[in-house]
Amino acid sequence: MSGTAGRPLLVVVTGATASGKTDLAIDLAEHYGTAVVNADSRQLYAALPIGTAAPTAAQRSRVPHYFVGTLALDAYYSAAIYEREALAVLAGLFRHNRVAVVCGGSMMYIDALVRGIDDMPDVSAGTREYVLSLLEQHGLDGLLAQLQIVDPDYYEIVDRANTRRVAHALEISLEAKVPYSTLRTGRVAVRPFDVIKFAIDRPRDELYARIGARVDAMLADGLVAEARAALAQGDFNSLNTVGYKEIAAYLRGECTLAEARDKIARNTRVYAKKQLTWLARDPSVVRLHPDGAFDQAVRAIDVVLR
Image (cartoon, rainbow, N blue to C red; front, side):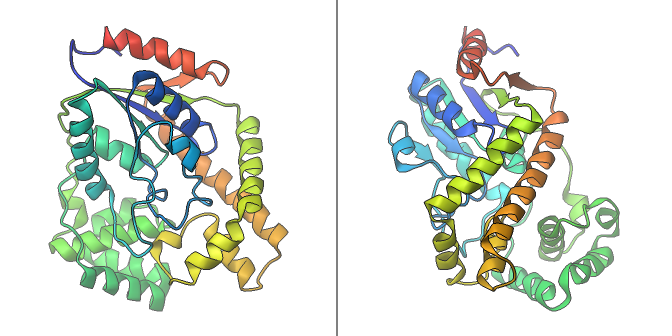
């Protein structure tokens, strides 16, 4: 891509889980004397650093980080809230530096920040509680049946296995009192900065090996204890996350720890496949070879900054 003379540049480091995003983002932020803005929806929760592979204290000491460990487990958060808050942070960063780095694999958060998100109402506690109770009493089928009534158009296209997406559409439809599909314009927002996106392009077998090694490291670092403490606080949506769901089953005696470990690795691979599919639809992403990814990224950034 080519930049606009003098405009700030947002460097987005995204890609599949375990591909090496965190290290690359920190290296780039350090090189350009700037900060890292997190775009991983689960790293926002303070009680989940191990299972979400949040930057460590040592990593965070190298450069400033935003949106890491800032939320309680029961806090409501969304891509729309992230868009507003992250844009405000970026405005402050760009007053002092022409470059800022965003890092994460939550593609909806990346899209919200870069492309904008349709104007949606904030979901009230009452609406969230109603949808949650519907889910608890009738399961995903209950949510789908209600969504089919209030928004039949979106019901036809939604991923019906994605509980979070179905629940979100239902919440917005009920809160706005109009179908969620009528609020989705798809318009791309105008941003006061240029954007360059990177992803480390690892072979699939290498990525899967890294995922397995990461799961083993999480368990060695205390994932079971972290999950036990988090689950003791309540049954929150923030814990409907790979790693914690499988450990919860282990703690209930439904599987062995070895079985839970294998399920975490398998479900993380499934998540990585979804991330890779999303990336494949974005031709603007610059693919970096794992060897020399930092140097490749710096060369591309410097071209834009000229």
